Image 1 (tube, rainbow, N blue to C red):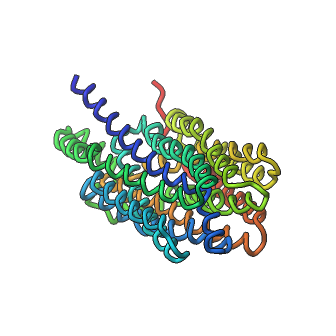
Image 2: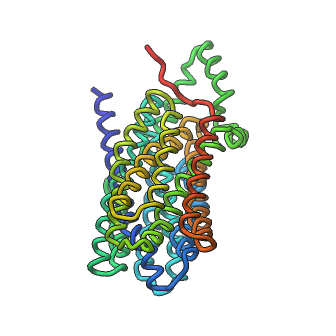
Length: 425
């Protein structure tokens, strides 16, 4: 009975957190098809400057906060740091919505990215707390599904509102949704089970028999005790899984933020597509991602963490090629379907890999390091792909994105050892 009550409480916490993530994502999705167009029309900036505002400063905030956010969550708990990140994100989004210059908007995008990074990093840690190794892939994929729920509906609403009321209105909508998510965290979300798990681990070690203690000591060769944190961090950072999975995660984010949310909307406008078409396209990229994200979690838990990677590479590369060649709305939608299917398979895999290799007592820092890779992807993707588009053209920018993405995934498949495979009965 107590176990059933504990499970229900855990599911309630996970459901509330996923709702909060969806609200944040809905706000970000609402501005994704219109922000590049707003910058270009309102301030007359180039593709590189659009990339700086959309991705570079937003990702820079993510880059410098992920590891500190993980440390704070490890020390003070998950819920207070979630609320802190959501509050900072709200301030940034609200002041972006009333921007009166390119510099103003860019600076507050940095603040929004700063808070959003804290929020998403600690949300991942929260879900890891509630999962077991056997359910980790599926439970962590719920965060991706929550993001998708917001990013599927958000661009539809944002593109529609922008077409009727103007390009600034979706910016106001984002600020309102950020405020709603902060209220849910403060009023309803409980703390995760991390303190309970620490106490349980300590009690288990104290009760262990000599033989069990010997097994635990052997385990510490691969998973060091928290007392050896400095050495554990160095061993983690030189782990091939940390480096290569991190690079793959970096390129997933670079493709999303640099290509899909920055270069592709500008290229689409050049092809003759309007804000409503581009909003529909971004939503279409997220719809199939629901199903492939669920499939990714199941495949990771059932057959191993590397299983979804190769299909993800193939689908995303085909999606980029289809966008480059798209000449009508149906071809544009096909590119969105392929991109969504590929990212749905690939994105959760990196998170689960990092959750597997996290040393005890350093779970927050490890997830923070993963988010740092994502921050680099946001910064470099938007800036580099925008610069390539200015120097050459949009097509070259997207072909280079596809080539580097494929190379990072193939390197992961070849050089990284599997971290988890379910044992048969």
